Length: 243
Ligand code: C5P
Image 1 (cartoon, rainbow, N blue to C red):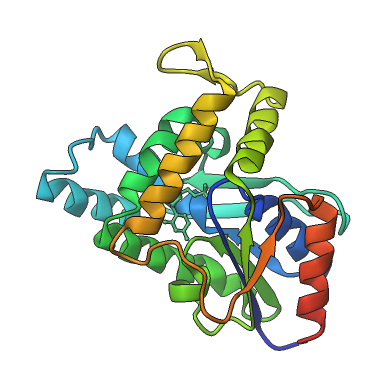
Image 2: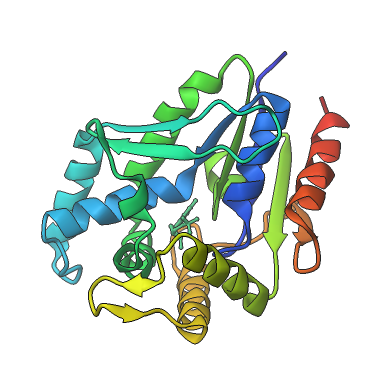
């Protein structure tokens, strides 16, 4: 059927990528996680020692790096139900787990606030979404409904209390054994995760270029007291009513 786009936006750790990936799997749509592209941009900044963002040339050089790097996203084929892992490659190298590390969590919102960086990521988002022209696309992020796909057929704004989001992220990190800060070698605490989420949301909401905000035509869903399955089913029903 015709191309159909589902835009899912919301704050950090609101469960967007889990829900978006499962939804795409159920609908047979392509899934793209736009946060991963900003994380790739941040990894490129770290790898190339570009840390002084006060320096005008830094952003310019980073933009060149982003545009010159081949970014690929491969979502494993699932059975239509289970959560499928998405692997991210930069110039053929699998960087998926590096992208989720603490160093990137701390730096990514700073990198994402520059208009020039966002424009470069926009080019990548469009390139990556080309493969979905036949079927449909589910993309999650902060500005998908407001800027990247303002004409998306379905727009969802996922929210949840900050403490709920921090707890989910904390449990996820402990389960995956990612609860140690590589730079300090110390255990990451719940309070640190909560602080970081609040700080990142604030930075994402108050930046000048396409800040995180609900599109006027987006449907809000508060997932604080909902299971992943409930959220996926709710959005699936909304999509199906419009197909
Ligand atoms: O979704 P995720 O936590 O991976 O996103 C990482 C960061 O990338 C966000 O905190 C935000 O600063 C930035 N981002 C953005 N616009 C998007 C997706 C992510 O600014 N569409």
